[in-house]
Length: 216
Image 1: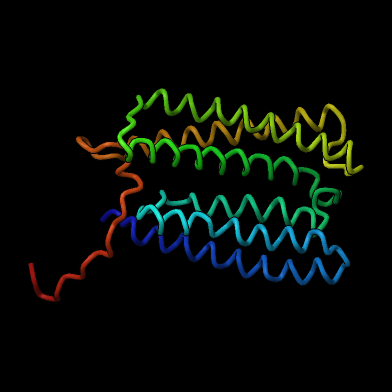
Image 2: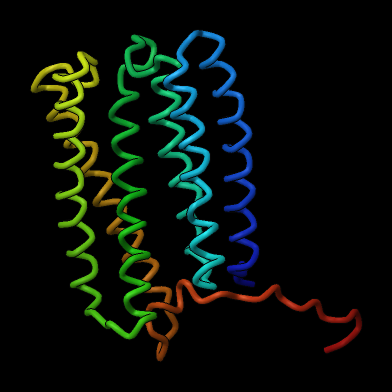
């Protein structure tokens, strides 16, 4: 028996709730270590992480399974990496690369949702166009993010980038995350039943009705 979209959405919501609790703890930890600026960043991340819920409520849709979870995970890695100093810890030498991979994956899935909304609103695109569009838009956003990081290092004397090798490593991790997003988008599109448009993936599904015991 296939797992219902309703159940998977509940799993997504549970994961989101767990991270919201963790964010709450990070706020107090940031204050405890005197990093007030990052405590505000955690609060902003908490607000951003519930935006997908607001989008679902406003547009009366259900996002594909994993979208809400990967968004909040991406926010957690970037925020906690600063608060807990994981970005600069020798204990986690590849933390920054993992964060870039997850970010590439999460933004790629957000772009997929954008294309699904276009389909819902009657703007139909070829499946190959959607997949290529996800990758190209990810390359653009990844480049812009790197410009922001480097500019922040120059203007605010932070150390988010550690030379050309680090920048190349970040780009590789981001690209792999983008390709993972394209692969997941492809699998989602393949799951659309024959005769349905791809916005089937975000169509709201009601809670399954329980059958009475003893009925056929």
